[in-house]
Length: 147
Image 1: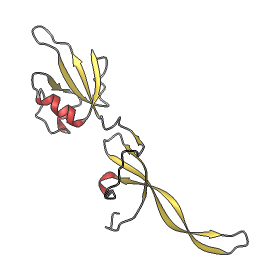
Image 2: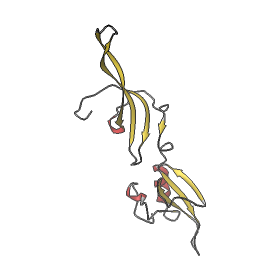
Image 3: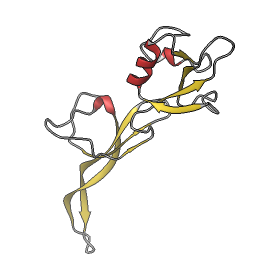
Image 4: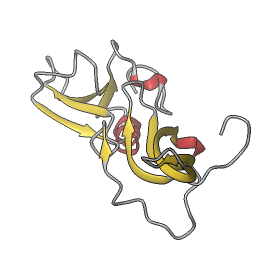
């Protein structure tokens, strides 16, 4: 929590927002009151939906989160590799784009890739280049335009 406190929650899902951040959708069981039809009240608890930034979630040791429903990115594939035909003596190459780049369309061959795959593709300077419109190199740990 922002003030350093901790709260146990039940993780119900995770999602990636358009800005690329991961969020966990959770239920926190918080204190509440139950009011009987005759007006009597008693303490109780109720699940309350909250969203928590992924960096603020501390997984339980030994707990697998593989089955948590995920929305947003396709399994973390935030990058698009488009196969571009070469011109003249240049052979074809891969152009790496951000997933939402308007240039990442109508390619000869298009596939979504993970950050690790995008970095590996760009490490081979003769085989891949970065898009000069969306500049994925600004978010990926790679060299500037052209690989």
